[in-house]
Amino acid sequence: MPATPDYVRIADEIMSDVQSGQRKPGEKLPTIAELCLAYGVSSSTIQLVNVRLEALGVIDRRQGKGVFVTDPDTWLRKPGG
Image 1 (cartoon, helix red, strand yellow):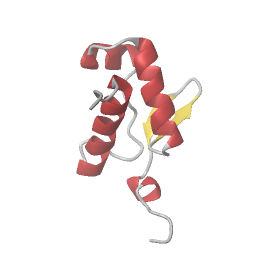
Image 2 (cartoon, helix red, strand yellow; image 1 turned 90 degrees about the vertical axis):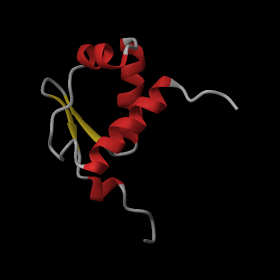
Image 3 (cartoon, one colour; image 1 turned 30 degrees about the horizontal axis):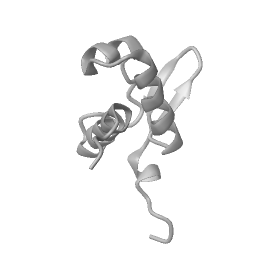
Image 4 (tube, helix red, strand yellow; image 1 turned 135 degrees about the horizontal axis):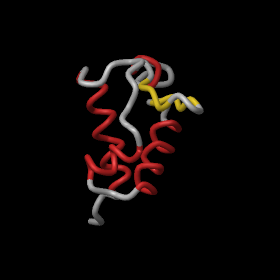
């Protein structure tokens, strides 16, 4: 069984933090440099994390402002549920 890529593991961890209430809707995430240090990965890995989280609706990137957590009720909702 192949290992989970770092960007998937980190994105899942951030999503788990939001679901558990450790990160709140509207909260600004740390910078790419800060996340690189925290997770011991390259900036390209953190950029992939952001792409994944944005595609899933977990974050909202605002040019010149930062990256913010969205309301988990909007991204946890399942179609037809």
